Image (cartoon, rainbow, N blue to C red; front, side):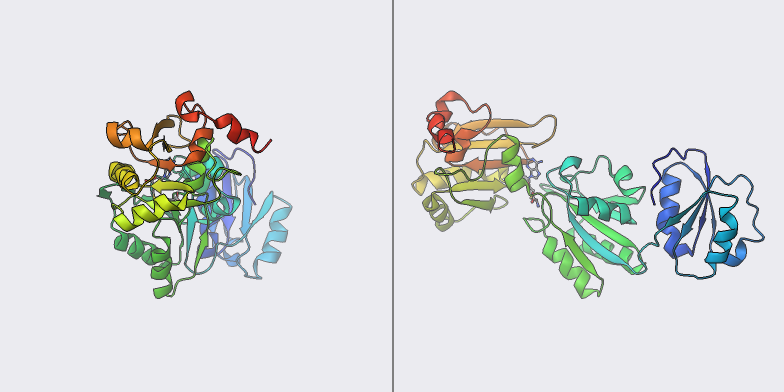
Length: 340
Ligand code: SAH
């Protein structure tokens, strides 16, 4: 149970076997309570209970607590706490594009249950201490060109903590299975025989364009979208396939190769007037959208100053974006009229 009450300086007695009680202990300590603990029913009779404001009884499965708690209820406010999960486990969470509002309820629940959180900076990480009620937080952040903690080491860290009986949350930006190496981490857990689950997240591929009011599909404008990684340059055949699809192209991790991509799409026949938008730092206070066209960006480098993290959108839907300059948005009335 989570009391919506200020426990600062209050004394809370947590009752329950150590492993089962660890989450409750951490939460009360995080709430700035002064925490005492007794791990077995037999310890209560001899304990000094003066100054106790609240008794938190963890349901650790020991039937010996029932008569002890009956005795305590006449003197103290007693609340019941669920036991922490017995064995170690790993939960991969998609954290969305970086703001807490776009965390799912399942992600919030897993964060509350976490003993350890391994996170990187694209997910919502500013308020993790609150969201987790004080779990151990480890920044394994990867930025382009900077592999702070190598992938294999992240996997080893996850497995080691879980083997120690902890609930390990691996918090990733967006969705774990969209350019997130999520399946490799699941495989590492499975190989180590550790229970693992995945909580999907709101991918930046769709949500960051939406932050600039750019829909990735729109009736009679685009009925397909392709999500591409710009981590490495595409091949000429890939440029041709993409240019031939006639839908929306969304590029993640694309700033380093954007010029090559646009030049390649031009060579493959994509019309130079095709609009492009780069949405930088979606949902952050300093979110910025830059509009151009494939021809202009390829020849004059109008998007050269944009930096990661950014999502690139190429296609007619860009004309629908918020504050799209009139020259690029031309004809947009007809597009929006199509849904009226
Ligand atoms: N799994 C993630 C993508 C990881 S690849 C997802 O589903 O969203 C990292 C890339 O995601 C970045 O280079 C950038 O292209 C994009 N990205 C993630 N969050 C972003 C944000 N808030 N604003 C702009 N781009 C973002």
